[in-house]
Length: 295
Image 1: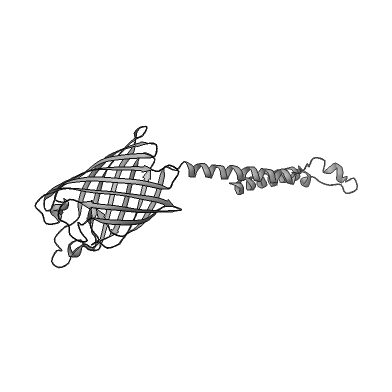
Image 2: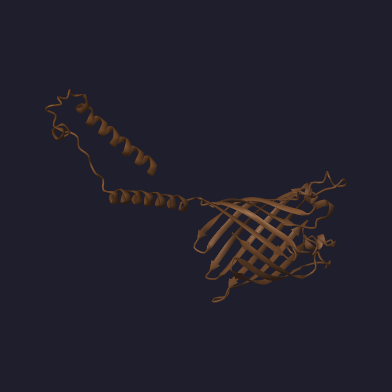
């Protein structure tokens, strides 16, 4: 912008100078009677103070910076990312990493209207059927219904891109799951109630699965600590007792824990348990530590 203004000013100045000087050059000059002062009386030059020019440059530069700042501040798109290291990947109380540590992370793109899309992944120990990686894709819409009341609805797709071997190549393990939740907050305390339902799909053995849950959180005033509790209930093919070999296709999972913000990181520890038979590294009660960061 500054270059264009300067170019136009210089061009106008040069053109004006040429047009002013042209009549004098076109006249027939009598050398003996030539008066250089009188001859150039019709040519005028405007001297621009150098300090004024510098002030103009600074003003234009400030306008450009301010405009760029407003454009950045008014962007409707937000990009965020997260990464975590956990001592055990527990999904609704059941270990998907064989009781071993897992690396996790994801990306989210959200719009000021409340719509968002994202992806999240974790290392797993899924054997020949599920492989070594879970990759979730999701999209949804969320926002505030009233002061202290929020909502979130969306659709999630569970993918296992490294699944399969010669025995299970024709078996599709990926599945869909819509979800919805309501959030409530009062001061440092918050609560969430939610539901997720996976309809009959071949990857679920042509069975469905319903999951309802509630999460509670409370920050301790004057400290970086946050206490958290979770209670979930599964009715369907993914119930912890059924996965552990029992006939019951319903079951609870729960957890209680604490986390603390330390600089750019969050450190947490939780005690997690499930209902049904206890299988070591799968459905047994355990303590899970988490180190995570968000960007």
